[in-house]
Length: 176
Length: 426
Image (cartoon, chains in turn orange, brown):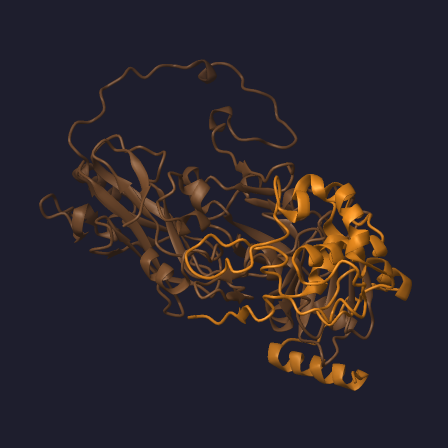
């Protein structure tokens, strides 16, 4: 647990390391209220932290997709004119051209909710309701063969989904 | 006065016409003499020196914000966009038409994921929250009262040079191939100062940085980097940051791939792990031949490119030329740049424009006597950690051809007898 005394120790260490007079920090920020933070904190952690109430299924998501996503991402997420959202499994290895989609490449299902809610549709981002977002995520998972059409996607089921390429990432180290 | 060696005793240091770099370092009369002695014979035909109209009539009045000469209208960024998204995509800096190391603000490369937002600076807010004792909101006016720090640093898109992963050399110029890099003096507030005020919890290890653009572009960054040298940048080359580069504030992470330098910064969330955003998982990761991908490759690796001569700048006359270009490393200072005129068979050290700054563009020069015959020009950077920029074959052997991001290998420009310069593989 974080304590005030710990902060003083850190500050003192900085003072010694810098070898300069301990300057008083301007402290010109104002304290944010929980309501303000809730209004802006839209990021979703891979363990599901931040996921809102609500839920949806692929069945429900298909209609939302047709209305708001299909024009750019094509029938069944096939892509064109913009990114393909389905298919591509097995294309990451070897010399073939990789087809990186939600299904073939994305390691966390939580990232889909995070991204769709914050950035899509392109011309009207942050307009989808939480239920619509869950339903679209369910639809994208279903057309990639990861869940069935009737499965409920919500704050408890979404983080439990294991994406096909979950183990496909290695943290970079220089020289590799 | 220094005696200048004449051909055939020219101070050759490499095959196919590379000359001693000190040729271009000698100041004043020495340089003039050297160039005279080494020039290729026939001087330009004499022409009458005329009294032009601008020598006789008053020029134009002053303007509030200056623009380049109307004769410089080719010195522009070039945009590429995906379909249906005119504000999404990138523009590239015309490296082949610039000199020195600082990129003019109007020519700094741009990369946007949902257009350039038109942000009212009086309404913009920066929220710092998460694993902190006191979540804080800052206005631009408040941040402008903090002690400012400046650093001259490059920003390079993680996808710069991606066309060189292709099987055949793309018939493109330096701007199209490598123009997703620019260098500016950035001025702002140390993020560590603000985080100290908020009181970072001991369990914190990362932050999430998020933009106020319609894409809400967001990236996770290790807390250690943030506490070391991250800036909330407010100024770019002395003026407020340009809209396309993050107005009114952006995260600046010296040496890190451009995408992590989140523009239009509205929120910093202190976390105990990466958030795994779309851009740090499905994009900006390097797919290897075995199907796995390298993630969180933050610093841009040592790299260099020759900007003059380069494709589009056709050589018109044999004789003495200045091979010039840019080198950089996200891991520190450039220690050495070598140039080859024979496709990498022999190398000679170039002169580095001083001062050489850590994580900034470094300009190099190499004197070259072009015989008029074919040549393949290359540059190879070594940074202060001893890392040497790889050849294209070396990089592809290690990473394959599908990594897409972080292409930092040697670029080759083929010079034909006609003087035409083309992108080639060598």
